[in-house]
Length: 136
Image 1 (tube, rainbow, N blue to C red):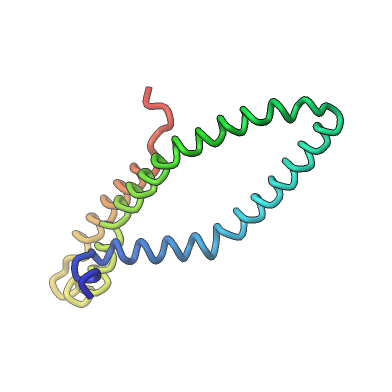
Image 2 (image 1 turned 135 degrees about the vertical axis):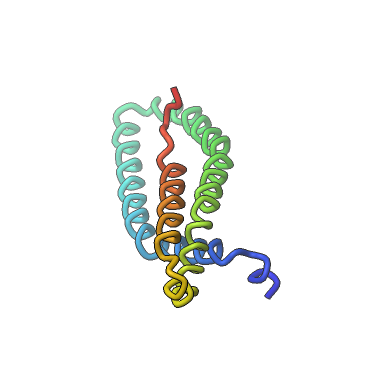
């Protein structure tokens, strides 16, 4: 229970809903693309190697550079994913609190304030997701 007491509700909801979305929606299409690309690469390398076997020697340093780039940019990708999850957490927390306190919001006529706050959080969340690739 210590985890749920110390972790905001929005972060827990964000984690479970995003993971479920990844597994249910994105995983099948990504696996299909992966299998298609692997088959395409193996067939292409096989055809090239049968025509020009010296090409396989050039593949070794290319694969080494690719492996280095994957290892170099892996932590960056994880950090960006973490920042994306942190940016979404306040939105989910606010939505959960609003839904749980809906009768109170209606009783004190605070719907507009919460709607404006939700809109501002959503705009902020989308600004984090839509950062330009080139800052110049």
